[in-house]
Image (cartoon, rainbow, N blue to C red; front, top):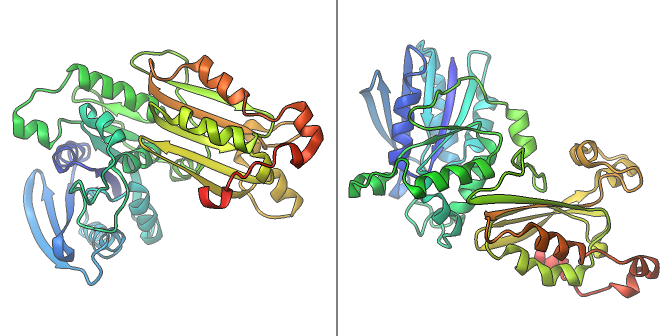
Amino acid sequence: MHITVLSSLDTHCRDSAAARLGRTHGNSAVVLHDLLDGSLVLRRVYRDGQLFERETTVLEHGCLSCTVRLDVVPTAERLASCGFDQVVLGLPPGVAAAMAAAELKQALDGRMVIDNAVLAIDPAELEDHMWDRHTLYESGFTAMPEDDRTSGEFLIGELGHVDSVMLFPGLSAGLSGETRIDSAHWRAGTELVGQLAPHAAVIGSADKFTPGCYDHVEAIARTRPGVVRRPPDDATGTFSTVLHALSKPLHPGRFREALPQLAAGTHWMRGRLWIASAANIRIAVQGIGPRVWLESTGPWSVEAAAQAKPHTGVDMVLDGHAHHGDRGTVLALTGRSEDVNAQEIRQLLDGCQLTEAEIEAQPAAWDDPFELSKAL
């Protein structure tokens, strides 16, 4: 049996995408899950567009992961035993495709294969989602008060993991009767999808959907903290992405001062840092809309190799240097073209590197109180 995992923040987009995906194979079932207040899971199963099962279940612990483990996965296994050739799993809003895929892969027994991971969005709303400061719970996307992710954080995670992005007008457009398709906001949002997810197929109503594109190993590799993927060309339009690599360690104080300038106006900042005050540690940086954070991801590949520790070595393969291995700073910043000036960004980052005099002087010249432990 073939499985398509479908995620979204908008139930209207999700349901529209699920209906289309259900027509990509014969003998398909479409399952829509929703997590409601009171730990109540609503499950609806459709065949040929007709509802043939509607059930509610109360979970002892009503969290998103429990919904996947205790209802989504068992439903997929049950439908496989019923002889369906394909099952489209429409996840509750806010449930990550990566979480569902991981749980499904543990339960697969050779009868099931994940064909696609798909995100359904209204591109006209994407830019607003990126800058929304409210949590998913505050915005009403999930029923979990402890879910403190923003909509931008959820969408960046999904855009990194999925192989396809389907475009549909959202619930607000349906309620207002607004015609969004091919509007200026729709076109701009579609372009932004291409900048944020250059690997993904972007599928409008007239575009062909290709089954069988999901590669779990590649999806995990490209979403590893600190990994940078960017559009394959330097063409700019409404949005653009600036990529810059540095081969010397960063002065901690100067980088701390530069970080707010880098983040200002940037929809998505991502990459890895080589900071002089923590030279042996690979530090991932991510900024999504108004939020920016740093994260220790362990030693660089060359450090791990020296300590005989297992390591993926992805950065060594892609960006390895003859003298310092994979140590180095690589940053990509995506935003509106008028807000992301490549020359200014590169000059600012170049100025954060240690000078030759500082390198020779060692820590005394750059021992700035960059409070790394608080930043990570």
